[in-house]
Length: 320
Image (tube, rainbow, N blue to C red; front, top):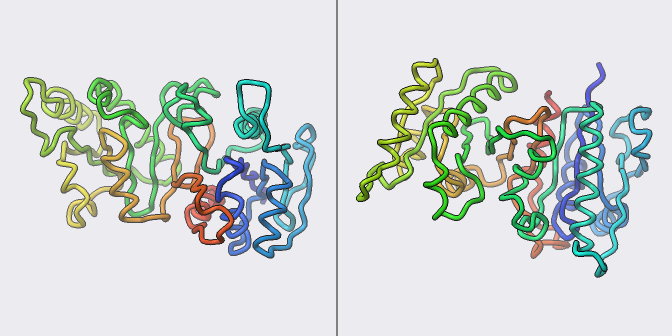
Protein backbone atom coordinates (compact mmCIF):
# COMPACT_ATOMS: atom_id res chain seq x y z
CA UNK A 1 0.00 0.00 0.00
CA UNK A 2 1.42 3.37 -1.07
CA UNK A 3 1.73 5.96 1.67
CA UNK A 4 2.03 9.69 1.16
CA UNK A 5 5.49 11.12 1.82
CA UNK A 6 6.21 13.37 4.79
CA UNK A 7 7.58 16.77 3.77
CA UNK A 8 10.04 18.18 6.31
CA UNK A 9 11.39 21.73 6.18
CA UNK A 10 14.65 21.88 8.10
CA UNK A 11 13.91 25.29 9.59
CA UNK A 12 16.54 27.55 11.16
CA UNK A 13 19.99 26.76 9.67
CA UNK A 14 21.77 27.50 12.96
CA UNK A 15 19.67 25.23 15.14
CA UNK A 16 19.54 21.75 16.63
CA UNK A 17 17.24 20.50 13.87
CA UNK A 18 19.74 18.55 11.74
CA UNK A 19 21.06 16.86 14.88
CA UNK A 20 17.61 15.74 16.03
CA UNK A 21 16.67 14.77 12.44
CA UNK A 22 19.67 12.46 12.17
CA UNK A 23 18.92 10.96 15.59
CA UNK A 24 15.25 10.50 14.62
CA UNK A 25 15.96 8.59 11.39
CA UNK A 26 18.83 6.63 12.92
CA UNK A 27 16.80 5.31 15.85
CA UNK A 28 13.44 4.68 14.18
CA UNK A 29 11.96 3.19 11.02
CA UNK A 30 9.07 4.85 9.22
CA UNK A 31 6.82 3.51 6.47
CA UNK A 32 6.11 6.94 4.94
CA UNK A 33 8.92 8.21 2.69
CA UNK A 34 10.51 11.37 4.10
CA UNK A 35 11.46 14.30 1.87
CA UNK A 36 13.80 16.73 3.61
CA UNK A 37 13.99 20.31 2.34
CA UNK A 38 17.17 22.06 3.46
CA UNK A 39 20.87 22.61 2.96
CA UNK A 40 23.00 19.69 1.75
CA UNK A 41 26.13 21.28 3.20
CA UNK A 42 24.65 21.67 6.68
CA UNK A 43 23.23 18.14 6.60
CA UNK A 44 26.58 16.65 5.60
CA UNK A 45 28.35 18.64 8.30
CA UNK A 46 26.08 17.28 11.02
CA UNK A 47 26.25 13.74 9.62
CA UNK A 48 30.03 13.95 9.89
CA UNK A 49 29.92 15.25 13.47
CA UNK A 50 27.52 12.50 14.52
CA UNK A 51 29.43 9.84 12.52
CA UNK A 52 26.25 8.95 10.67
CA UNK A 53 26.53 7.42 7.22
CA UNK A 54 23.63 7.17 4.84
CA UNK A 55 23.33 7.82 1.13
CA UNK A 56 21.73 11.14 0.20
CA UNK A 57 19.47 11.18 -2.83
CA UNK A 58 19.12 14.65 -4.37
CA UNK A 59 15.63 15.33 -5.71
CA UNK A 60 14.64 17.79 -8.41
CA UNK A 61 11.63 19.69 -7.10
CA UNK A 62 10.29 20.24 -10.62
CA UNK A 63 9.99 16.45 -11.13
CA UNK A 64 8.94 15.58 -7.60
CA UNK A 65 5.86 13.60 -8.72
CA UNK A 66 7.97 11.23 -10.82
CA UNK A 67 10.13 9.75 -8.06
CA UNK A 68 9.62 6.36 -6.45
CA UNK A 69 10.54 7.12 -2.86
CA UNK A 70 11.57 5.10 0.16
CA UNK A 71 13.71 5.68 3.24
CA UNK A 72 16.71 3.62 2.17
CA UNK A 73 18.32 6.97 1.41
CA UNK A 74 17.86 10.51 2.72
CA UNK A 75 15.63 12.13 0.11
CA UNK A 76 16.78 15.74 -0.06
CA UNK A 77 15.69 18.83 -1.93
CA UNK A 78 18.82 20.94 -1.54
CA UNK A 79 18.29 24.63 -0.77
CA UNK A 80 21.40 26.74 -1.01
CA UNK A 81 22.50 28.50 2.16
CA UNK A 82 25.44 30.86 2.49
CA UNK A 83 25.92 32.57 5.80
CA UNK A 84 26.78 36.05 4.59
CA UNK A 85 25.32 39.54 4.52
CA UNK A 86 23.04 40.30 1.61
CA UNK A 87 22.28 43.58 -0.08
CA UNK A 88 18.56 42.91 0.31
CA UNK A 89 16.53 43.76 3.42
CA UNK A 90 16.16 40.07 4.23
CA UNK A 91 19.17 38.28 5.75
CA UNK A 92 20.61 35.06 4.34
CA UNK A 93 19.11 32.86 7.05
CA UNK A 94 15.60 34.22 6.53
CA UNK A 95 15.92 33.97 2.76
CA UNK A 96 16.97 30.34 3.09
CA UNK A 97 14.02 29.56 5.40
CA UNK A 98 11.58 31.34 3.09
CA UNK A 99 12.87 29.39 0.08
CA UNK A 100 12.49 26.11 1.97
CA UNK A 101 8.89 26.93 2.93
CA UNK A 102 8.01 28.07 -0.59
CA UNK A 103 9.10 24.71 -2.00
CA UNK A 104 7.15 22.83 0.67
CA UNK A 105 4.03 24.92 0.03
CA UNK A 106 4.21 24.23 -3.69
CA UNK A 107 4.49 20.48 -3.05
CA UNK A 108 1.48 20.59 -0.72
CA UNK A 109 -0.54 22.64 -3.19
CA UNK A 110 0.01 20.18 -6.06
CA UNK A 111 -1.43 17.45 -3.86
CA UNK A 112 1.57 15.14 -3.62
CA UNK A 113 0.96 14.71 0.11
CA UNK A 114 -0.97 16.03 3.08
CA UNK A 115 1.83 15.49 5.63
CA UNK A 116 4.07 18.38 6.62
CA UNK A 117 6.62 19.03 9.39
CA UNK A 118 8.76 22.08 9.91
CA UNK A 119 11.79 22.37 12.12
CA UNK A 120 12.06 25.14 14.73
CA UNK A 121 12.27 28.77 13.55
CA UNK A 122 13.65 31.89 15.19
CA UNK A 123 10.26 33.62 15.01
CA UNK A 124 11.41 37.05 16.16
CA UNK A 125 13.83 37.23 13.23
CA UNK A 126 11.99 35.38 10.47
CA UNK A 127 8.44 36.65 11.03
CA UNK A 128 9.60 40.22 11.69
CA UNK A 129 6.43 41.14 13.65
CA UNK A 130 4.21 40.51 10.61
CA UNK A 131 2.78 37.32 12.13
CA UNK A 132 2.52 36.32 15.82
CA UNK A 133 3.89 32.84 15.07
CA UNK A 134 4.44 30.10 12.49
CA UNK A 135 0.84 28.92 12.90
CA UNK A 136 -0.33 32.26 11.50
CA UNK A 137 2.39 32.38 8.83
CA UNK A 138 1.52 28.97 7.40
CA UNK A 139 -2.24 29.51 7.64
CA UNK A 140 -1.95 32.82 5.80
CA UNK A 141 -0.04 31.19 2.95
CA UNK A 142 -3.03 28.91 2.39
CA UNK A 143 -5.56 31.71 2.95
CA UNK A 144 -6.95 29.96 6.04
CA UNK A 145 -8.61 32.37 8.48
CA UNK A 146 -9.96 29.86 11.00
CA UNK A 147 -7.03 28.03 12.57
CA UNK A 148 -5.71 26.98 15.95
CA UNK A 149 -2.66 25.64 17.80
CA UNK A 150 -2.93 22.24 19.45
CA UNK A 151 -0.08 20.96 21.60
CA UNK A 152 -0.84 17.25 21.36
CA UNK A 153 -0.08 14.31 23.60
CA UNK A 154 -2.12 11.10 23.63
CA UNK A 155 -2.90 11.54 27.33
CA UNK A 156 -3.69 15.25 27.29
CA UNK A 157 -3.54 18.11 24.80
CA UNK A 158 -3.88 21.85 25.18
CA UNK A 159 -4.99 24.65 22.89
CA UNK A 160 -4.34 28.35 23.64
CA UNK A 161 -7.24 30.54 22.51
CA UNK A 162 -4.75 33.31 21.76
CA UNK A 163 -1.22 32.41 20.69
CA UNK A 164 1.85 34.66 20.66
CA UNK A 165 0.33 37.82 22.10
CA UNK A 166 1.58 40.14 24.84
CA UNK A 167 -0.52 39.61 27.97
CA UNK A 168 -1.97 43.12 27.88
CA UNK A 169 -3.64 42.30 24.53
CA UNK A 170 -5.13 38.94 25.51
CA UNK A 171 -8.38 40.09 27.15
CA UNK A 172 -9.30 42.17 24.09
CA UNK A 173 -9.10 39.08 21.87
CA UNK A 174 -11.32 36.82 23.96
CA UNK A 175 -14.72 36.60 22.29
CA UNK A 176 -17.62 34.16 22.16
CA UNK A 177 -17.01 33.75 18.42
CA UNK A 178 -13.35 32.80 18.84
CA UNK A 179 -14.08 30.30 21.64
CA UNK A 180 -16.76 28.62 19.50
CA UNK A 181 -14.39 28.53 16.54
CA UNK A 182 -11.58 26.87 18.50
CA UNK A 183 -13.86 24.31 20.13
CA UNK A 184 -15.23 23.39 16.70
CA UNK A 185 -11.70 23.00 15.29
CA UNK A 186 -10.62 20.81 18.21
CA UNK A 187 -13.74 18.63 18.02
CA UNK A 188 -13.45 18.17 14.24
CA UNK A 189 -9.75 17.36 14.41
CA UNK A 190 -10.18 14.69 17.07
CA UNK A 191 -13.12 13.02 15.34
CA UNK A 192 -11.37 13.02 11.94
CA UNK A 193 -7.77 12.21 12.90
CA UNK A 194 -7.82 10.61 16.35
CA UNK A 195 -11.10 8.73 16.03
CA UNK A 196 -13.21 9.93 18.93
CA UNK A 197 -15.13 12.90 20.29
CA UNK A 198 -12.93 14.74 22.80
CA UNK A 199 -13.79 15.79 26.32
CA UNK A 200 -12.82 19.47 26.51
CA UNK A 201 -12.17 21.63 29.56
CA UNK A 202 -12.03 25.42 29.30
CA UNK A 203 -10.04 27.59 31.69
CA UNK A 204 -11.08 30.99 32.90
CA UNK A 205 -9.04 34.08 32.16
CA UNK A 206 -8.73 35.54 35.64
CA UNK A 207 -7.24 33.98 38.79
CA UNK A 208 -9.87 31.61 40.26
CA UNK A 209 -12.21 32.87 37.48
CA UNK A 210 -12.78 36.01 39.55
CA UNK A 211 -12.09 39.67 38.89
CA UNK A 212 -11.94 42.85 40.97
CA UNK A 213 -12.93 44.81 37.86
CA UNK A 214 -16.46 45.57 36.71
CA UNK A 215 -15.98 43.43 33.63
CA UNK A 216 -15.36 39.76 34.39
CA UNK A 217 -14.64 37.90 31.14
CA UNK A 218 -15.28 34.54 32.84
CA UNK A 219 -18.87 35.50 33.67
CA UNK A 220 -19.66 37.70 30.69
CA UNK A 221 -18.02 35.75 27.84
CA UNK A 222 -16.57 32.34 28.74
CA UNK A 223 -19.32 30.81 30.90
CA UNK A 224 -22.29 31.60 28.58
CA UNK A 225 -20.29 30.39 25.57
CA UNK A 226 -19.65 27.03 27.25
CA UNK A 227 -23.36 26.68 28.02
CA UNK A 228 -24.19 27.47 24.40
CA UNK A 229 -21.69 24.91 23.10
CA UNK A 230 -23.07 22.24 25.45
CA UNK A 231 -26.48 22.71 23.87
CA UNK A 232 -24.89 22.17 20.47
CA UNK A 233 -23.63 18.75 21.56
CA UNK A 234 -19.99 19.41 22.41
CA UNK A 235 -18.51 17.51 25.37
CA UNK A 236 -17.31 20.65 27.12
CA UNK A 237 -17.23 22.09 30.64
CA UNK A 238 -15.78 25.01 32.61
CA UNK A 239 -14.58 27.58 33.16
CA UNK A 240 -11.99 26.08 35.47
CA UNK A 241 -9.32 27.87 37.43
CA UNK A 242 -6.04 27.47 35.56
CA UNK A 243 -4.05 26.87 38.74
CA UNK A 244 -5.88 23.60 39.55
CA UNK A 245 -7.14 22.16 36.25
CA UNK A 246 -3.77 20.47 35.65
CA UNK A 247 -3.80 18.58 38.94
CA UNK A 248 -3.81 14.84 38.20
CA UNK A 249 -7.26 14.28 39.66
CA UNK A 250 -8.68 17.00 37.37
CA UNK A 251 -6.75 16.64 34.13
CA UNK A 252 -7.41 12.90 33.83
CA UNK A 253 -11.08 13.70 33.14
CA UNK A 254 -10.28 15.47 29.85
CA UNK A 255 -8.63 14.99 26.47
CA UNK A 256 -8.05 18.68 25.74
CA UNK A 257 -7.79 21.84 27.83
CA UNK A 258 -8.56 25.10 26.06
CA UNK A 259 -6.72 27.97 27.75
CA UNK A 260 -7.13 31.69 27.24
CA UNK A 261 -3.50 32.45 26.44
CA UNK A 262 -0.21 30.81 25.48
CA UNK A 263 1.65 30.33 28.76
CA UNK A 264 -1.50 29.54 30.73
CA UNK A 265 -1.56 26.06 29.19
CA UNK A 266 1.81 25.54 27.45
CA UNK A 267 3.81 25.92 30.64
CA UNK A 268 1.85 23.09 32.26
CA UNK A 269 1.87 20.74 29.27
CA UNK A 270 5.63 21.12 28.79
CA UNK A 271 6.22 20.55 32.49
CA UNK A 272 4.13 17.37 32.38
CA UNK A 273 5.43 15.85 29.15
CA UNK A 274 8.63 17.79 28.31
CA UNK A 275 9.65 16.65 24.79
CA UNK A 276 6.77 14.18 24.50
CA UNK A 277 4.39 16.56 22.74
CA UNK A 278 3.96 17.98 19.25
CA UNK A 279 2.52 21.19 17.83
CA UNK A 280 -0.37 20.65 15.39
CA UNK A 281 -2.04 23.42 13.40
CA UNK A 282 -5.81 23.01 13.30
CA UNK A 283 -7.90 24.09 10.32
CA UNK A 284 -5.41 23.51 7.49
CA UNK A 285 -6.21 21.38 4.39
CA UNK A 286 -3.26 19.16 5.35
CA UNK A 287 -1.65 17.89 8.56
CA UNK A 288 1.03 20.32 9.76
CA UNK A 289 3.09 19.24 12.74
CA UNK A 290 6.23 20.62 14.34
CA UNK A 291 8.41 19.61 17.27
CA UNK A 292 7.32 21.46 20.39
CA UNK A 293 10.57 23.34 21.03
CA UNK A 294 12.66 26.14 19.56
CA UNK A 295 15.96 26.30 17.62
CA UNK A 296 18.03 26.17 20.85
CA UNK A 297 21.10 27.69 19.20
CA UNK A 298 23.18 27.34 22.39
CA UNK A 299 22.99 23.54 22.01
CA UNK A 300 24.10 23.40 18.36
CA UNK A 301 26.96 20.97 17.76
CA UNK A 302 27.00 19.58 21.32
CA UNK A 303 25.17 16.31 20.55
CA UNK A 304 22.94 16.79 23.60
CA UNK A 305 19.58 17.53 21.97
CA UNK A 306 16.61 15.24 22.56
CA UNK A 307 14.90 14.10 19.31
CA UNK A 308 11.75 12.74 21.01
CA UNK A 309 9.40 15.52 19.88
CA UNK A 310 10.49 15.16 16.24
CA UNK A 311 10.18 11.36 16.49
CA UNK A 312 6.65 11.82 17.83
CA UNK A 313 5.84 14.27 15.01
CA UNK A 314 7.02 11.86 12.31
CA UNK A 315 5.26 8.88 13.94
CA UNK A 316 2.01 10.84 14.22
CA UNK A 317 2.00 11.48 10.46
CA UNK A 318 3.39 8.02 9.67
CA UNK A 319 0.21 6.44 11.08
CA UNK A 320 -2.03 8.49 8.79
